[in-house]
Image (cartoon, rainbow, N blue to C red):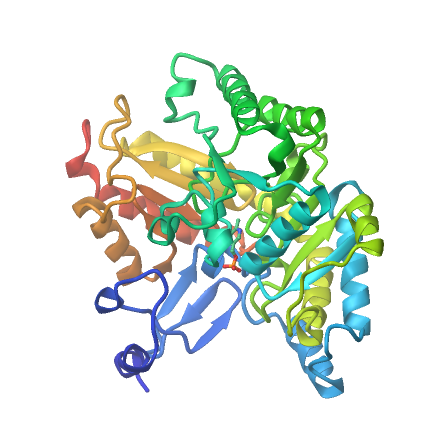
Length: 445
Ligand SMILES: Cc1ncc(COP(=O)(O)O)c(C=O)c1O
């Protein structure tokens, strides 16, 4: 089937996520290697977002493919109350790489169900009900995970579960709390406001605070040291658990094993991972908990279960992905290549007045486009359809063979960690040419 036939047949028989079906115009994929993939007509795309910011090790990795094949030859599936070698070994690896000796993992199928189970565990362990989350966050598309995320994808699902309370965000570029303040002062004002929220909600009712280790699709909006110190202090003071969602920011994306590793004083009680755990080769998620929480469930039933928990094929893929991160030194590589990416984006700021903000670290960046760098008015509004200039940019990427997310006034720049300097230059050149399209719509452009 050629590209058009394949797109049409998929539209005829399958449903698209997060889309009015009539507006869905999918790319097709027939082959993928490294940072590139090809559509059914043989057109090549550079994968500038690692698909859904999950294919960290790049496409077509032979080591992982072989590990999956070898596991499939032995057996693919084992019921989750029986155990396997891949499960034990991947649990051991997670205990090694996650912060502060988190001890034991419960394996799920992906990110959202890992979040569901993390919230269940926090509520079972603490005997408390509420979970505090952020407005600018995303934790998955299932019912409670969707409520937990503040991202507008939750709105159609409202009111969702009743035990989520949302906090405001460390959005130094836009939040009124940061206006006229330094970033540190803004972080402190936000922490003070969080304390108020905890008091108003009743600390004795709050099981956990759930935060992305490093903010992702909601705009890479990340607090600094003061913010994270404040969060940890509030958790300690009120005996509230800290759940860190590393689904997107884990496994080298931000230049550390986990996003929260940028703040080594933070002690997550529960860490949730997925995406880069298996890089999309087979779906898998994990909830990794502290020894105290693990010990609680020695005597109390863990009311969590999934037919495909600890899937052998997925665990084998997870072990192989870990070996690729380790043997190819991809965590350090992400930090080093991220510096080149950031420098390239900074250069573009000099020539494109629409480039309002550049946020991120490692290979995890978003750029925010504005009509006017002084007023910071977004080039496309929050939660609205793309305006003409953003739609032109989005079309340009598609036509010229760059695949990424163009969301409102944001462009995500999150390529696989295996990207070379030449490939980074190729992507940056396309971003440069795309930004030029915004010039007629921008003050001083
Ligand atoms: C931070 C974060 N948490 C959870 C999820 C949900 O993961 P999944 O789509 O695998 O269910 C996502 C997905 O993008 C995410 O970015």
